[in-house]
Length: 307
Image (cartoon, rainbow, N blue to C red; front, side, top):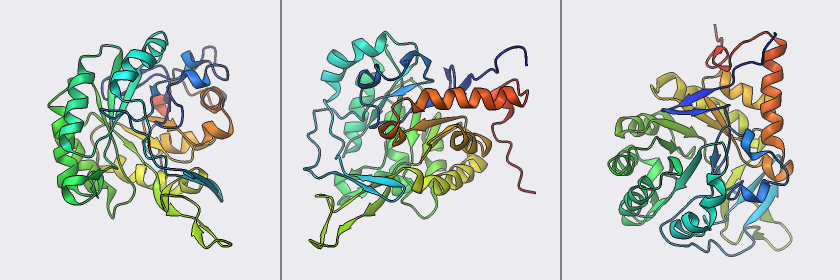
């Protein structure tokens, strides 16, 4: 092939120079990785989850390794929206990739207030809504496990912003397609999945949980086959683009998600193992396409053959 393959993708009206994004909570506010990776090469930067006010998170220990992965119970620690805009965003504004704010709350009203305030911030290109959060009005049931609750919170955010809206889905459900369709109907421009899987690790000497929070979110290679299956299921029914997340360690892993229908991917846990993994994956995808004379990334998206 005489020229490089075209890696550009579109996720709900937001064009990316390539399909490789950072997953919220695993890349900080990007500056933490600037000495390891050329940030301007990334497809998109999704920052650490933001709440209206600063959040301290859970007490330690809040990270523990497990076979083929890790559990985290960070508790969505973050600086809060006001400090993010004042202190973190100026650096991010100078980068090429679009900046996407991941938001969360414990009340529908908090999501709506965040969306309204972010809508006025020109440097933020899109919003990713984390619905894997406990709704305090329903005794702590997660917004993302009930189609009606998911619809309400997504619709509330949709009413407050014209920015591209990504909804991040929880895998801790019986049928993820129900939640996906509810989010789509409520106005999501794009769906991202999966978030972490609720899990637990026990210290057999102390007979106590290894996490202070008792349970945490499992991520890493251990969840990749499950994530690929769920992305495939959602891609079959959704009319909006899908972003694949879960255990991506290299270009081959990313390509699996693209082949089953994802338009882009997010890389999370692998950043802790190899801080250059995002650009390694971009290079790997480009090489894969070039070696097979495939002109565009769009020529492999959704090409899974099952017959």
